[in-house]
Image: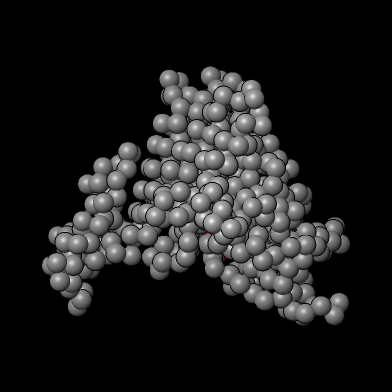
Length: 374
Ligand code: AHM
Ligand code: MG
């Protein structure tokens, strides 16, 4: 009756986090509350992302969309009504449905990232457990007003992979959590800390299923959203990345501007000289999806420096650090071309860094190529 037990005794993310919490008798549950608000944000974004494709049709019903009027495809009024009610169905304690509809209308579709940001900021502030928030969408850090302050700093990219939004390809949310001693004295320096000081990190991928991957510093666990329950269920306990992989993942369109070690590494992936088989190339262009595959199947994901962008593209605080934290917790490595990524000390909240992360042995090879260069 193993199968029965599996179906009826579900390890939800809430139960999982409470179990973890019970290991620390002195804990007052603040972290669990913060995390449940992050989970709520992810569920909201997931629901919005799933409806985004339909939102284009809704745009046809509205008066504001110029493009739509010239569109030869005009849906039946009944269909339009049905879709409108579907979109209006997005209930949230944070945003009125009217606002949602506006954000979803035709030309405004890209605003999904703005909507996601609003949801996350509000979920974080209303948790009463945060003091500083850094979002990829906001130029300045948000210092939470004193009456709602707690001791956690959250850095996040509410909807990463913007180029994939309009074509329905996987996108995701990335987050990292720091803790400070005294929330009352929150300062910007509290988030300008090396990634190794993070308490927890994770991402949620809005793909063929909605998957949340989390580390609180003792391994990595993956949860899948069961839409019928509205709960994330533990589906990938204790994820370990294969020691060596068969896949490399990089935007090769930038190859002409790469530095020597990056170019040599990719060349070796395609034309190995040690008798091993050539690696396959997989590149989605959504960091969450590319890293998720790397974590499960092994291999290496890189966004290196190039002549045009000497610091690469990806942001240290809410892209490089959380993903590096997860990689190390899963037994892999993460390297900037100069040092262990988690040792980096950011000077600015939106700072960028080159990044090479994935299977231990593959990153070891990259490190050797950079060492040989010196
Ligand atoms: P974004 O913040 O505009 O979404 O950019 C971040 C994304 C990452 O998800 C992805 O790894 C990378 O940009 C892909 O960049 P490129 O299109 O240059 O290959
Ligand atoms: Mg991003």
